Amino acid sequence: MLQLRAMESKNLRSFLFPLAGVLLVLGGLFYFAFVRIDSLQEQVKELSRGLASTTVALSEKTGTLSEGLSTLSEKATGLSDTLSTAEKRIEATTNNVEAVKAQVGGVEQTVGTLQKLSKTDPELLKKYSKVFFLNENYLPANLLGIDKTYLYSESRPEQIRSEIWPHLKSLLDDAKASNTILYVKSAYRSFGEQGSLKNAYSVTYGAGTANQFSADQGYSEHQLGTTIDLITTGLGGQLSGFEKTNPYGWLSDNAYRYGFILSYPKGNTYYVFEPWHWRYVGVALATFLHNQNLQFYDVDQRTIDGFLVNIFD
Image (cartoon, rainbow, N blue to C red; front, top):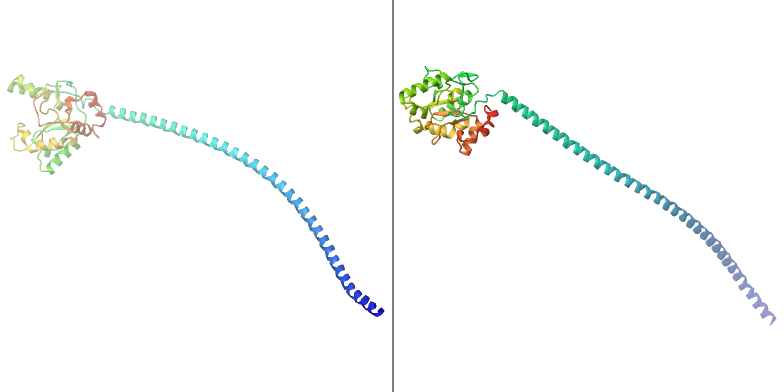
């Protein structure tokens, strides 16, 4: 019995000692784990405090940045308003400058027009033929002899204003190029020449008849140096019958392009129909009359005078 108890005691010790060792190891592990956990908790707390501090700092910085941004936004708005105001001022200044330039340009144009008019004979577009009067002292400036090749009678010299000659020459040359034969029968006549011509007509046809187709001295468009009588071949040197010729038809369709108009068309109240009598009034006015189907003597003088500045353009 004693031996059995001794053996059981021995066996118990052999079991308890290892168990105690295991428990000791486990206790050590638990202690190490506890210490480690406590340390980690402290680290977590420290990190939390650092994070909180950082969050506060970031929040403060964010607030500062937000305030800065707001200030910058206000400044930007202010600058934008200032820029807008400046742009409006610049636009207003530009408009003022343009307005001044336009006024200056208008003044310069007016001055240029007045200067041009001051050098242009004011009589050129007046309504003569029993309306306006040219005295015996009136003499057109710059009279030029017409080349003999364009005259019906080479033995009789004819003159016209030098500014008109290029237009008349173009008309005659272009007519010839289209197989239309035209010659100058008569051009400039002085005050005295017109008087002599009218007297001769009065003797031949009687004063009443002569008044129907011939102007008194001082009332003839020929004295201006802008007017011509045109003729063609086949009429025996006579003006009568000219309206039945092809050259008259060509003139009716094209003369305005060169600045010439028919002064006394059918139905006028001044003289009998004179299809040969063409007066230079400038391309602008001649084109206006042609397009509007108007007669020179039926248009208001003020309207006609508006074309004077460009008569030789």
